[in-house]
Image (cartoon, rainbow, N blue to C red; front, top):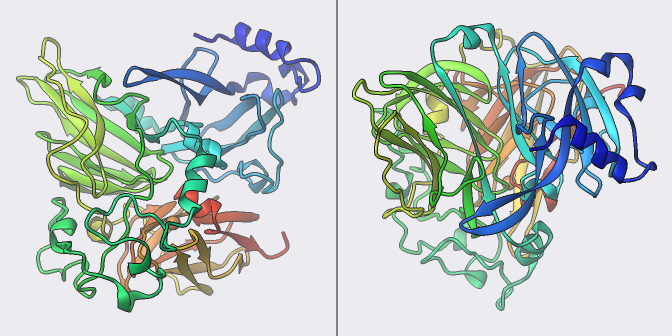
Length: 504
Ligand SMILES: [Cu+2]
């Protein structure tokens, strides 16, 4: 375990060049929580892996803060290479947001930077490097607890999900960009689907092969049946979406696989609030609560009218808060995260005292469904935006070229002015889903395929293939904010833009 003394001592070991002692930080930082971006070793199915992490002096991973208070943190770079951390879902002043050079530069090895801003209203957030280092697990929970959470008679369990590879992210990206023998991108995870020449370009929908896929089965999600709604993919017969670009070596829940999962001790008849974070670089999951019925109470740290079910999709960057009640007789209850469209899975086990914890295999017998918008369509914000006509609208076209593995948004910069109600319509013209994240703001989902409704407040929304999602927000946080796909390799190959305030 690292304590503050060892942290400081090893900082000194890095030499004086990058040293910034906490004593030289501004006065407000004196009582700040020190956080170190550093390396650590984890065990992945019996094999040691050196990964990054974000450790407090007590050895804990990530941060837990009180709503309404301050985000007073000093971030020290002990990674041995330049890095910076983004506070995903918080709404700080722009210069403390943590994207590289937007506007602050990366931290050099050994450098420390102080942060201080109002942490906001609470919820499940997270923090991560806005670089390829995210793939190397430079991510951690950032939990902001409300007074009502602290007073609640329920146990909180945080679950951070990852996709893990022993290969470097640079190698994974080079592999994605490598043309296959017939000029197309090698598609790893669509068995039964022709690769390369059969899919000459993401936009060429007319040539999309059927490939024997039962899309109805794939989309049969299990949660929140919406009687009377038209089928999610009803307008697109014969289209096949591309789900997973990378076959990972492991899928992790709190750094562990199902060969040795975290077993959380819970009380018979007790209430548990699961704060689940999809911190994976390029993997969406379907959360499966198994024998326990769950109530979805928040998405992206924002309360929603509760939706009950046992399966809830979540894409990269998103968080879901689920409330479950353990049966009075107790037992062991796996909470699984199923890899979208695939058999792999990870998870934790909730177990009461004395319960037998049965082994759960790391692969299931059937593929998990693909994420769709049925759950999104059913969500209603507890605190929606006040109704208002937009002062400004943007249409953002999301496109990709699978052959060269490059992705794009229709402009690099989307202007707004402070005080405006802004609506942005995301039109996905590609055959991959894009989790679109806007920094510095909470937005509301206000339409799907042009059909308006008062949906969830969020900071990351899924735009599935050939679908249109409209978000709205009040522009009140000056800056030039990153606005991008949260698929790490889509972002790295072009799906990155900015929301640019006039005068910044
Ligand atoms: Cu994307």
